[in-house]
Length: 150
Image (cartoon, rainbow, N blue to C red; front, top):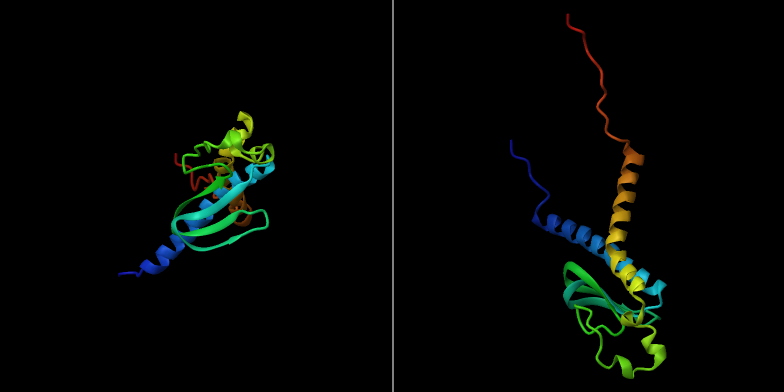
């Protein structure tokens, strides 16, 4: 007997939704921690490549959805690229602008911002498992002996 699967299109769509959600949660962890410490975010992107859709919020952050949903990034003020290299003109900027940049923050704040993405993923995974256990219970195999042999 041959059973049919969900189909390639549905599988790709489900994969994109799951990966996109995971990436969003991860990147939002970085974004939230950066905002907590007063770092300005220039861009928040889910996906790479050409921007398919996007908007700019009241804080000036460009929220984007890219064509290739296999990752994402948060670009903080002053970052020049994916490797978070500081802007060479950093010292010539006014103090108010420098205070909002990632590289101007103390090491412990930068470490928290960097670690916030994986920590958020870990916490979300715990909450999802807790939700499953709450809804469906924990699978348990009862230790029942059916009969005693002599």
